[in-house]
Length: 93
Image 1: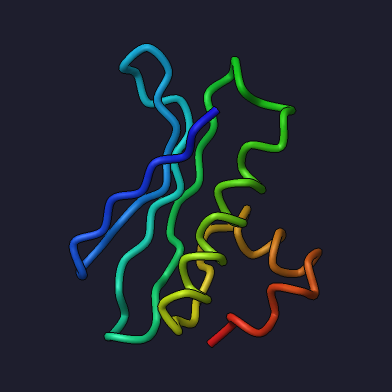
Image 2 (image 1 turned 180 degrees about the vertical axis):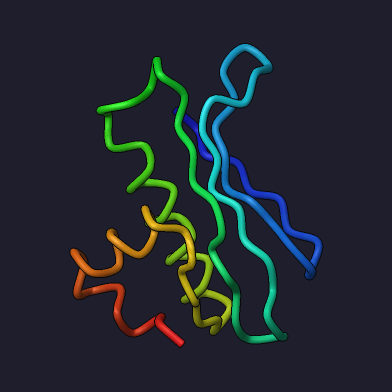
């Protein structure tokens, strides 16, 4: 399963497409040039229970580290993942 990423310096998303249909997505907006806000995470019924949501967050953390970005998670799912993963705390704004 391949994660895709789109970013236009104002907002972006990490997502999975299967047969041309988006099946999972984590969206964010830029608060400023160095902080993103994760505002939404959704996984389709057929992919639920496979850890896809966590993998979307993991992909975003890798992106943040490569680009020296911090995050404010406002999405309840993203907040929960950041609380469970101490290795992600360095990215919190």
